[in-house]
Image: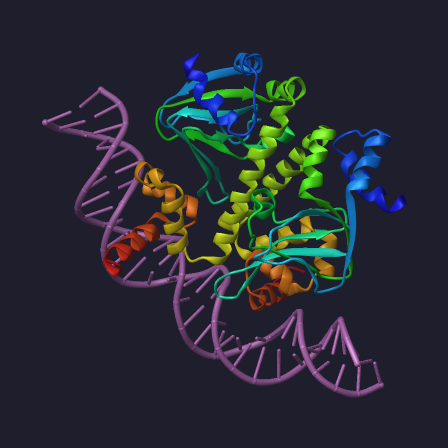
Length: 196
Length: 196
DNA sequence: TACGTTTCTTAACCTACATTAAGTATAAAG
DNA sequence: CTTTATACTTAATGTAGGTTAAGAAACGTA
């Protein structure tokens, strides 16, 4: 039962659950382990799960028509991830979800999630709230991309995802903030020698 | 009662309402009219309403540290708009919501919205769904900004917001897709003479 | 119907960031 | 521990899109 405490605490930050509701949720979860570089989802597939990361780290990314990858989101421990477009439309998506290291998730299927909305309406609230939060951060990220030079986007990233910057390959950070690895390397050099 | 049909139809696309629930919703709405160039919300204020546009058109935008405006979203007839960050945190926001022409909205206050979640749980579902849809389109827009040249972003915009392109000042479109008015003008010239 | 303001266009010049390429460091996997 | 792939750095060169400026068109207000 302890392997569920992380997800339960995550949910109980926003809603209250009775023990029975907790047990019901747990009965719907499906634990999945994947190794570094393996995928939970690939472009072209229909996303059938919301994933909650209990250990390790995932990345969601797309590949554009020129073959370049773009990181949509990182999902370290305690984060949710899915291809939202595909999950809600149940059409083939464009997102890859890949493990950056050995990772364990609890998968909640779309059908289980819908059952949950009906049986335990508080979950409707929970997912509304985390979707709202996600929307706010994507809006802010878009505005950052429209208004800030790459150097500030990098510094913001380091602050906001503090522990992550050390774990992630710089390449992935570059892709997230929207620059090439070469240019990120140049920025890091500059930041190192011009301030302090 | 007919002035409410647009918002009721909008909501009934996603959930069912009894006549009593409809009446309850209507009792919570506050109609507001504003004229071209007036604001419903300014940066620094706390956003207290979700706005549903019944006629006219609004834009949500921010002003960066260099004084440049960036359009976050347009809200023509039948769209919802708010400063989501400020609305959910009830802290001062960064978004201006301004009328591009004479506009009428139905305003639903944050407190009314929360009451609605409790009295009529289906509204929790409704706002979950529209927030999910909004999230998907912001994710796509971010990816477009990361992966597509300005010319394709402009063409996508023209397709996706078809009627809007004719109504909006080109300046606003430029701000939305993330280029200067000068560069948009250059692109339009090019598109006009190179194809067809 | 005219005036002032805002928007649009054109063009010369500029810069942040991309591309290419080649070498070096790091780390995964046998 | 070695091997091999992957990630990182540096530097030269290229380009999409920004900046500045100034005139032309369109539009809102009277």
